[in-house]
Image (cartoon, rainbow, N blue to C red; front, side, top):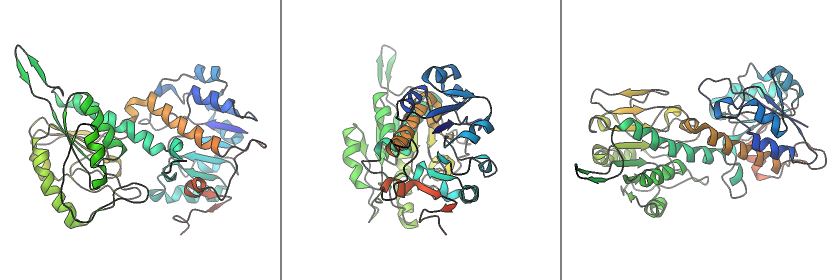
Length: 377
């Protein structure tokens, strides 16, 4: 069995799908697979080719050569539909696919006879926890959001009492208390900020308080969460009520961090232009949903802009990529856990166990057919 780790060619992607550590772990499987790593795959995240060689991988300079040999293709992001025909027929691609917005990619996999797993579709269950890429990366994104905001703010976060006077703590408002939101709260508190947080799911109030933050209560009527743990979409009336209630908190905040993503759909607009204009000059808004349309009116994906009122809106994509070494380590570990779970210890290949709930959730294409119920039609 041959596992091929691709170099991410997108200039904005610094993460790698494998690290020297996970290469060692792959080499420890029995029967031992051969690991190929495309030259440069780990450079952006601090892993030079030599470290992969020392871990037991063969570094190849030609992507075409690796794809011709590979039984498994590991990468961070989805391939282009044009590249998929160069994959070996019957091989398995494992990566983020954004399947609700990439139908052409799924069709290309099926046409080429290449099997495909979408990391986003891995069920959020206890058994699959070690494979949950979305959670591991969101954790780092929440951490990075606070650091980026503090560097942009021009003000320290903790309170300081000095002979020159007392500096008040910065006020941080986190909207959305999922994995990213919880880590943003924890990081802001560790840095000494005063933190408020809001989520449509009352069930997270205890978690917010356990981190030392204040949970903002807004009566929106009936809300809740999906069986995957995501907040349910609000009605237009609920969104309007939420925005009115949050406007006062935003006005008093130095930093606002929004984390609300709806998987497979555009992000809900939570912070309006009027709410941004009501914030103090120099305040910072970090929009973690910028790559799916943004939670903030005025967000420009991939850019940091300053409004006429002096508020900076950070639309940086993939904030977890700003800590690429750790992001790669966690993502690569998730990938290894997935492969290990389905590794055929007799034949050395991938065991497509049709009764496995994890595979049922994340296998989208097999043997030239789109097999996942959500994408068949």
